[in-house]
Every structure is written in C-alpha cells, then in structure tokens.
Amino acid sequence: MSEVVVVTAKSFPDPDTLPLISDVQYREPYSSAGMNRKLRGIINEGFYTGFTPSPGDGLNLLISSGENGGSASFDVGARYQLTVRQQSDITIAMTAGTAMRVVLEVRYVLGQETYQVNSASSIQSTQIVLLDSATELSDGQLEICTVTIPSGKTQLTSDMIDTSRRVNQTIGVVLSDALDGDRSNVAASEKAVGLLQEGKQPLATNLTSLAATTAAIIAKLIELGATNTVSLAELNYLDGVTSAIQTQLNAKQPLATNLTSLAGTTATIIAKLIELGATTTVSLAELNYLDGVTSAIQTQLNAKAPLASPALTGVPTAPTAAAGTNTTQLANTAFVTAAIAALVGSSPATLDTLNELAAALGNDANFSTTMVNALAGKQPLDSTLTSLAGKTISGLLDYLGLDTLHGVQRFTASGSWTCPDNVTTVYLSGCGAGGGGGGGGGAPDASTKTSSSAGGGGAGIATLKQAVTVVPGRVYIITIGAGGSAGNGGAYASNGGSGNSGGSTSFGSLLTLAGGGGGVNGFAATGTSNPIGGAGGSPGGSGGSTGSINSIVPSIGGSGGSGPFGTGAGASRGSTGAGTSEGTGSSSPQGSGYGFGGGGGAGTLGATGTAGNNGSAGGNGILILEW
Image (cartoon, rainbow, N blue to C red; front, side, top):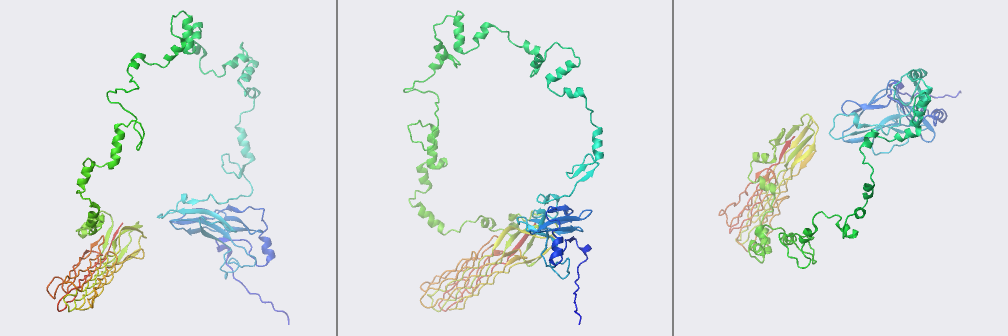
C-alpha cells in the first residue's frame, strides 16, 4: 500500500483587505527566518513613509498611509528585521483627559501562526496599540506619536499631537531642479547648479585685489594711477576718527605752562599760588582740612551741642531701638509706645489700661469659670444654620443663589433628568431623608416611676453645590429619600418602638446622600433601676432623657437633627398623669423643611399608667440641580 499524505487546508485573509501587513510568517525555521533577517543591520529601524497622524472628527486620530502607502522597519530580537506596510488609512478613538502613546507593534515568533497566515489565529502579526505616556517601549514597538487631550475637550487638534519621539528614516538621495527647496534629503541637479551660476558676478583681478585692509586698498589705488602725496603710514592715522578733525581741534584749549602746572591736587595748586607770589600763614596741611567744606566753618561749629549734658531744643530725634532691646541705648517715644502696645496687644483705647480690662470682665476674679459654665449650655455656632433659620423654600433658594442660574431644577420626588446639550458639569445641592424619632416608654402603675424618653432621628447627609461630571443627552435617574417613620409610644409599662432610618437621595450612580438614622426607643421603668433614654440617630439627633424611679418629673424626648435644608423636630415632654398634660400618647412636634430628623417621644408616668408619646417622622430628602 502506498503512503497517504493528508494536507489540511488553512484559510487566511485577503492581504489587500488588511490595513497593516507584515513580512514572511512561515512556521518552518529556514525560509521564514532567512527572509526576516535579510536587511538586519542594513536598513535602520524607523518610519520611512506613511503612518502620518492628524486630527480626525471629534476625538478620533487619523493615521494616514500616504500616496504610496506607509512603510516601517523593525529590529526584532537580536537577529531579525521585519517591514510593516500600511495599506489604508486607520482611525483610532481617543479619550479626553488622557495622555497616550500611539504605538505600531510587530510580532514574529518562529513557528507561531498569526491571523495574517491563518484566519483561525487570534494573534495579529502587526497592529496599532495605545500605551500610557509613561510606559517604555518593548521589543518590536515604534511610537507613531503621543496624544495628550485635556479633560472636557470634544475635538482633537494638531497641538495635542506630539511626534518629537517618533523615529523617521530615509533611504537614498533624490535629485531636484528646484532652487528654493528646504528638504535635507534632496540634492541639487546639474540643471539647478547651472541656473545658480548664471546669476553670479564674474571674477575680476582688480576687485579681488581690493578685498583687503584699508592700507591695501590705498596701495592698490596708487598702483592704478591715483595721485597722492600722503604716505600709507599717514593714512593709517585716520583709523578710529569719528568726526571732522578740524572741528575737534577748534574745540580744544591752547596749551599754557601755568595751566599745565595747576593740573594737580589741592596741595599742588596752593604750592603753585605761593610760588606765583600769594602771601599766606596757613600751611598746606591745614589748607587740606578745607577739602569738602560746603559753608562757613564757625557757623557750623556754633550750631553743634556739646557732648557733655547737652541741652537739646526743638524736637530732637534718635534711632528707634529694636523691640526687646535692654541696654543703655536711648529710648525714644516710638520705642516706648511700641513696648506699651505689645504689652496690651494693641488693644483699643477703651481697653488699654488694667482698670478698663478689669471693668470689661465685670471685676470677676473667676471670669474663666463663669464663661465656661455659661457656654456649656449653648448650641455650637454654625453660620449656615443661622442664615437658614426661619427661611422658606424660596428664601433657601435665594440664599443659595440657585434662582440666578440659567439652569436650575428642584426635585422633591423621585424622577429623571436629561442632561442638556453642551452641559458637562452639574452642581448638586440636597440631602438624604431624616430618620424618624423613637417612641417613648409607657408609664408603669407606680406613680413615682418615670419611663425614659426616645432619641430624636438624625438629619440626612447633605451637600452644597457639589460638582459632578455629566454627559450631554444622557438620562439620569433621581431618587428622593423618604423620611423615616416614627416609632410608636409604648403602652403602659412597655417599651416604645425605635424610629426608622431615612431613605437615601441619589443622582444616578454619581452621587448618593444617605438618610439619617432613626432614634432609639424609650424604655419603661421597671424594678429599682432608672431606665436609660434612647440614643439619638446620626447625624445630629439628640438622645432622650433618662427616666427616674424616685421622681415625678416627666422625661423629655430627644430633638431631631437639623441640616442645611431643614430644622429638626423639637422635643416632647411627658405627662404626669393620664390625660393631664401635653403630648400624652401623641406625637412629638414636627420639623420643617427637608432632611430633618424627627423628634423623640417622651416617656410618661402616672398613677394608673399612661402610654408613651409617639415620635415624629423625619423629613423627606431633596435634590437641586444647577448648571
């Protein structure tokens, strides 16, 4: 039987349809390796034609192949050289806010099939990839360009494309007849050289001789027949003259022996005057003391004060010593005033004496303790809450400056919002829903046992004008959190119910504002221990007061938390007997606005037992969009 050879056919893509195509991709080692190292060390690695980057539509980068297609050479590993051809233009989608290296890469592994030779392979023989700008290139990679697009940009421009790290190569020299080209790889043809020679000045012996120094030019003129009685040495004296010589000579002083003798120091001049007949009893050394005197010497001496015990008049001045100086240096009024000011800390005129300071403190020797005790019961100051106190919803919007913007939408119920065209940033203000207040504990039968009160609900988490990036035309789902329900007051001798947490307010998946926590319930008084009040919900809810087994004073429910968009519900006060006082078995007061915490119900006491007060519900959330 003859041997049967089975050949498995493989499909491969039409090479003309590939935008990029690489060299030989045979599996066997001899032909493929031999073909792929044919030009290693002969052709340098880099881009020769094509692969030209330019801005496309929007944020697309266009890689053009050029008129005759693109060519790039790669050194792969230690032995091989591969050529990549670009057969058609390629468009790459870029992203704003990134800096990416656009890289052409080629792959050659002996025996490994690529998509170029086998359609079943997922490995590309060559492709363009995007790398972070800080990433180093690997074997078989060449950078086409680096593209840096600032955030918020929607159109790619040329100044965002950097080709400074691109390696361009050329082969051979092109001849050109052009006379004004600027390419470094193009040489002038014989015709171009001839055209340049036609416009040159013919050489002349006389002109060549004149291209020398001034002396050589004059010598040449004499040689050519010019009449001249001035020697070359005399003509060289003119070197450096800047204006008419006679004019300069006319402005000079004629030479005189006496004037020349006086051209010296003061001592020399006086000596010359004596020599010329002047009579004086003053020595030259004494006369030199006059050097620099500007007025009558005696008058100047009479105006000086003596060094010992001078009697100064007018407003004498002295240099101001540096602060803290402790020497025998003179202290002027400026130094003294500064020292006193430093002592009282530059206090105003009404507080710059110890007597005035004592009066301002009420002559209270324990002023610090008095102030600490006074401040202990005060609410911490918050400028936002102070500004929002008592405002209506319209007033809140005015205060936040939301009515003056060109795009504002307020959501108090869940819905959706479609981002307008050209809007990429929206500013969000709002809050989650407040937690409900807990219910107070019911009173036992014993009239001297007071049940504890419940804690108030916490306010919803809030934000003011938080910037969020959005996409024009996209629809965003908006959820408004519902206020947490209140806990019911406990029946007599029973614990109350805890308040429920408020719901979250959200803007799609981009922002979530959690609701406030519910207030913890109040407890009925049993046994001989005082029942502890319920804790307040977070954030901002206060706890209810503790009940007492030895008091007839009712407990007080915790206040609900407040936020920028709402004021928490106030506390309720328990009764001293069934149906005999405010709030018995009813809800605590309601808050106002949005996102506030509900008040905690109060515990009660009574001879026959009374139910605890119900808490109040938390306020719903709100979300305000401005753009």
